[in-house]
Image (cartoon, rainbow, N blue to C red):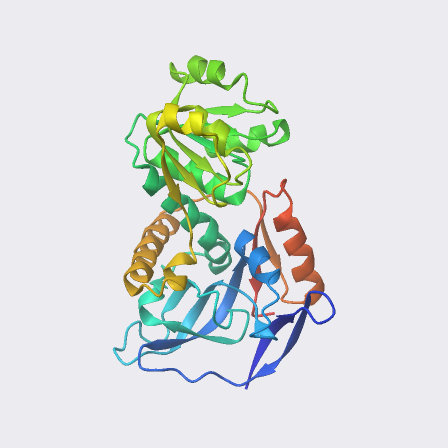
Length: 326
């Protein structure tokens, strides 16, 4: 038996600690002893799913842990620290042990703090994929909407490491934070009417080559500020866009979906996720990632509920990790 945190919606959303059977691994699965579980905007979506087919499901998607039992190939070997972004259709990661396909695991460098790594997984992977889809070159400019969100904070840092100019849109109260992370321009006006002039002043052009759309609330405005055939990566789906904007800009639109590799049952896509994990591990090892606000929580009902409320807030700037060793 092992301890686990399960959730259900029988009497509203509740999280309960209890014991479940220790899972049995198949030939290609690795048994991992979980140390930290990262919590992100993805967990808010999972928590709001009634999951009628799987009541009392174990919560959690991202995790850091130590290999307890290797798969048939022997890699990664027992004692290796690893992290992964899990399959949202399966039992989650908020338990003593978790089963993970070996190809989905990334080895975590020894010098990296497990709590920091766990909290980084989903925001960093979304930012890396979003920037990759933009296919920008050094010297190009990227416009990041709602840049104060954890994904936006990651994207600013990665974009600067790529040699990009960064225009961040947010509220005035987040301006110092975003500038500290490396944003060249922080646009804080409630509408987009003055953005072109601000871009011209800072970058010498009124349009940008790429944009990251984190919330789906200003997609059309972002596209309006792209160069012709510019690119936008959308993390919250694709809302309706007026046809004249599409015809004028002919944008290349990419959708970012971390869970897509699992939902499509694509082993190839899952392996690519591990490659992205390798890129993240390298950045963590080199201390190229800064989390301005990192909060550790206990895997208890009240703490999880409070964290999910914060993550659902448009003002959230905090990264979260549940300490499974408590």
